[in-house]
Length: 606
Image (tube, rainbow, N blue to C red):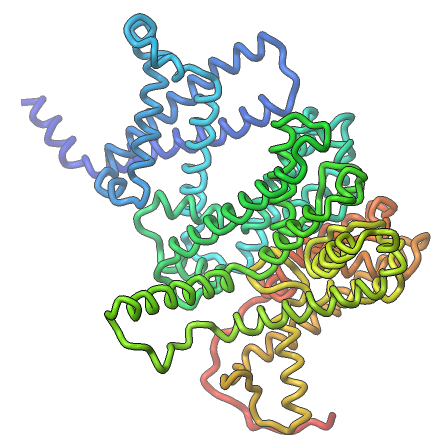
C-alpha cells in the first residue's frame, strides 16, 4: 500500500520533477561548457608541466561525463521539442560520438581495446578537443540566446555583445602563450578592440609581439567582429532551438535589417555561407600567389593565406608580417594586391546587396531557361527585383572606386608609384582607392603620400562603405541621400526621388542625424586629443580620429605614440564606429512612445 501511495505521489508531481531534472541537466551542460572554455584557455594559454597535462586529461573526461548526463536529461525531459530542432541530426550525431568517446575511454575501455581496436581514434586528443569545443559552442550559444529572449533593446544588445568579445579578447591576448614577451594591459585591450571592431590601428608590431597562438586569437576576433557577434551566436542558437519568442525575432529582424520576421535562420545561414565561400576563395588565391616564395612551411603558408583573406574581407587591415603589405616579400606581388582589393570590395558591399543580386540572377536563369524550353513566353514587364538600396550602393561604390583609382594614379604617379611597372602602378592604385573607405591596408608608408592623396583619403574614410557590411564610415547610402536631398531642395522639389521611388522622410531624418552625430563625435575627439597629445601634429590627430571613427585603420604612424588616455579614447571611438554612431546613441537613449497627435507647424528662418 505504501508503495502504491509513493508511486501515486510521484505521478502527481511528475511534471515538477521533470522540470527539476531539466534544470539540473541544463545546469550540468552550462557548467561543462564554461569549464571547457576555461580548460582551453588554460591548456593553450600557459606552458604546462607533464603532471598538469596528466591532470587535464582527467578533467576532460569529467567534462565529457557532465555533458553526457546533462544532454541525456535534456533528451529525456524535452524530447518532443528536441526532435523538432533544425539540426537534430547533428545534435544526435554529437551525442553518439560523445557516447563513443566515453565508452572507449571509460565505460567499456577494455572491450574497445581488445575487440574494437579500429575505433582507437576515439581516444585521440584531437577528437576529444574537437568534441568539447563543438558541444561548448553549441550549448553556450543556445543558452545565451534563451537568456536574451526576454526583450532587450536590439541596439543595446548589439553594443553589449561587442563589449563582451572585446573584453574576452583582452583576456585571451594577455595569456603567456599569446605573446613573445608579454604586453601591457592597455596594448592588449587596444589590440582586442581593433580586432573585434575590424579597424586595424595597432599600438605595437603584431608580427613580432604575438606568437602563432596570439595570431590565431586575433584572426578569430576579426572573424567574429566581421560577421557580427550576434549573427554568429544567433545562427548556432537558432539551429538548436525549436521555438523563439516574438521579441527575439523582432530583435534579429532589426539587427539584420530585414523587412519581415520569417526566414531569419535562412538569412543568417546565407550570411555565413557567403562569408566563408568568399574568404575560402580569397585564401586559395592568396596561397597560390605566395606558395614557395616566402620561406614558409606549407602549414605556415596556409595560415598566412587564411589570416589575410579573413582580415581583407572583414576590412581589418592587420597582417602577420612587419609592415604589413609594405613588407618586401609582398610589395611586388601585384596579383595579390588585386585579390585583396576585391576581397575588400566584396566585404564593403554588404550582405543585402549580394543576396539581392543572387535573387535577380536566379530569376533570370529560371525565366530564360523556361523560355528556351518553351514553357513560357518572353516577359515584357519584368518584376522590380533590384532594390533601390542595391542601385545606390553599387552605383556609389563604382563611382568612388573609379574616382579614387584615377585620383590616386594621378597624384602618386611621380611620387610613391614612381619606379613601379605599369601593372604595379595600376594594381597599387586600385588598392589605394579601395582601402581608405574601409580596410586600412597600405602599400606604402602613409606619411609619404602626397597632400592631395591624404585629403582624398580622409574624405573617403568619412564616406565609408555600405550598410550591413564589414566597413564603417557614414555609409555610402547616407551620403547619397544627403546629396539628393540637397539637390531636391535646390530644385525646389517637394519630394526627394530617385529611380521613380520617393525616399522616405524617416530615411532623410536618419541620414541628417548620422551626419550631425558623426561630426559631433569627430570634433570632440579631435579637440580632446589635441589636449592629451600635444606632441603630435594637429593634422595627424585629425587623420587618426577619422580612421578610428570610420574603423579604417590607416595611420600616420601616430597610434604607438598615443598616451594611455589617447588609446582609451580611440578604443571607445572604434567601438562606436563599428556598431554605428546612430546605433550607439540609440542604445543609450530612452525610446519615446508613438504619439497620436501633432502640433501646428511653423516655419523657422534659415
